[in-house]
Image (cartoon, rainbow, N blue to C red):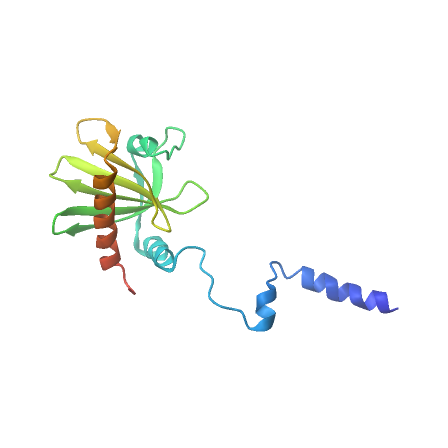
Length: 159
C-alpha cells in the first residue's frame, strides 16, 4: 500500500520538466542564457529590429554558410559621427550570433562576426565593387570591432 502512494508523487515531480535543486533552498537567482548585456541586445533586436536578408558572400567568408542562400537577420541601423552602423542578429542557426558592420568612406564595409558574449570570431572587408576578404590584421580588426560594439552599447536602451 505504501509503495502505491509514492508512485504518484514521483510521477508528478518528474512531469514538471527541468527541475533545479537550488530552487528548493532559496537559490533562485536570475540565470542568463547569454551575458546580461548580450541578452538585452538580443531582445532589443528581436523587438525593434527589422527582418532582412543579407548577401551570403561576406557571411560565407566568416564561416556563416546557409547553403548559398541569403542570410535571414533581424537588423538595426543608425548613423554615427563617423559613418553608418548596422547590427544584425543572425537567425538561421540554432544559436544567437551577431554581425556588426559599418560603412567606411562610402566604399568599404567592415564586418565582424561575434557571439552573445561578444567574442569576435572573424572579420571581413568588403569593397563595394570587389570580393569580401578576411582581415588578417588582428589589431585593426579588434580595434574596429570594439569601436562598433561601443557604438551599439551606447545606443542600447536600459544601460
